[in-house]
Amino acid sequence: MNSSALRRSALPAALVLCGSLAFTACGSSGTGGPAAAGPVTVAGVSISSDPALHDALPEAVKKSGKVRVATDVPYAPFEMYVTEGSKEMTGLDYDLGQALGAKLGVRFEFTAQKFDGIVPALQAGKYDAAISAITDNKEREQVVDFVDYSVSGSGILVAKGNPQKIATLDDLCGHPVAVQTATNQQKLLDKHQDKCRELGKGAVDVQTFPKDSDAQLALRSGKVVADVLTKPAAGWTAKSADDGSAFEVVDDPAALGGYNASPNGIAVAKNLPQLTDAVQKALQALIDDGSLAKIYDKYGVASIAVEQAAKNGAVD
View 1: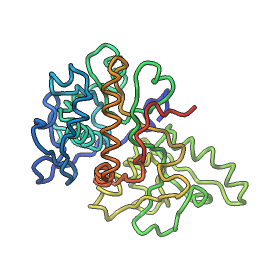
View 2 (view 1 turned 120 degrees about the horizontal axis):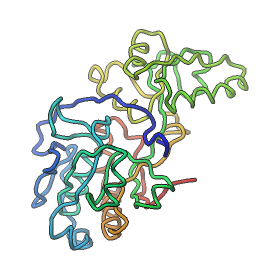
View 3 (view 1 turned 90 degrees about the horizontal axis):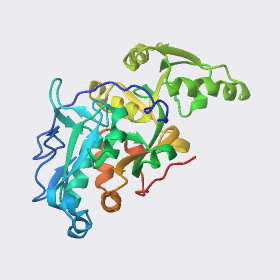
């Protein structure tokens, strides 16, 4: 994601149904998750509150028992509605919020907010935090604080079984490849043409489509060898399409989070430094006990998880 486009490219508004667990990241806008009286189950993991982390929260948050969270929904797999027409939310970011709330002993109350209004709303005090696949960059760090929870860039989606044995961007040289028009992924492929020439391979035959769903149809039909899209979208598509039987994601060891990856962060209002610190510690606890990995794996995006909960980790 870049600061001008805000998000790296459009993602399909995928819909998912909640599982049968007592609590599986199904809540509603304006009501948040369950009361934090006991353990909460998120992505099959039971998470209990840490009294020390709860005590570290700002007094206003402890008194209200909730953190007011803004999110722009739908943006699969980070935030989605459970069913079309429903206000109940699910998705990686929603699950993460419920896990953090459980660890901190409060509710993370999610409310839908258009993406370009999220930071201004935080500055105005309408929300305490935002979890919405927001790129942590230096410009935004001037007005909000971030706790980084993922690193994501562009990924390669191929047919199940990877018949062309695509392993890196270089392997796309000389082949037809699908991409959504006017995205950073198209720019990535255009820029890679020089590398293809250096390698003595043919240029990537870039096939552009107005929607990524059209690019996926081209991949299904064998018209292209791959579809280049955001790594989280690729992971979710591979996980959900035809129950995981249609596609798979190429995990390049040199770019596990994706090509041109940048950190995504939980944005917290600047006037709530105690909340930022508490969220950072709670996130690190979820990383250390393996809970975060299970949440990411639920959405097919384990490769974008971070190992350290960094604060304001934007790179120039």
